[in-house]
Image (cartoon, rainbow, N blue to C red; front, side, top):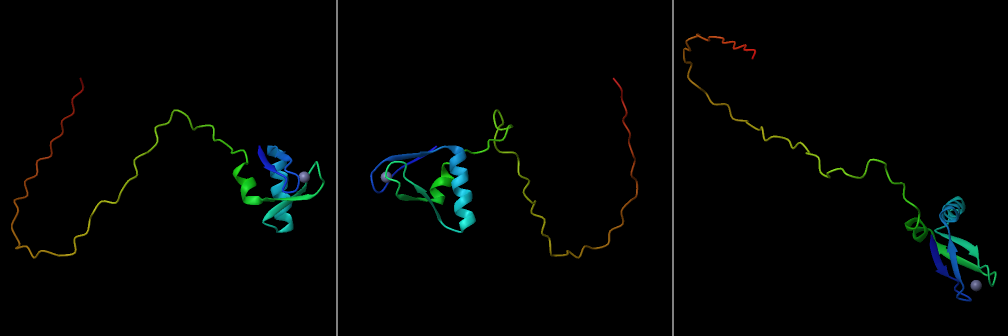
Length: 106
Ligand SMILES: [Zn+2]
């Protein structure tokens, strides 16, 4: 709900959600930054900023928005920048790799 006053007679003008949406649509269709409506009292045109109307639009609230802990872990890139190659001396490695498999069911 948006309420403003007529700039001519100070009459309070209220727009409901649907009327606000309609007003925005009309203003956008006309390519204007404001919506012009007639005061119900003095019938003079009253300009309402579209951006003000937008603020009053009923927001669509997503269903899954309650009970959720905000802040899921955002994976940051791990620092993996090794540009230097170390000239290592060739060492003989004894290839004795015993593969152990420990399968235990308990
Ligand atoms: Zn008025």
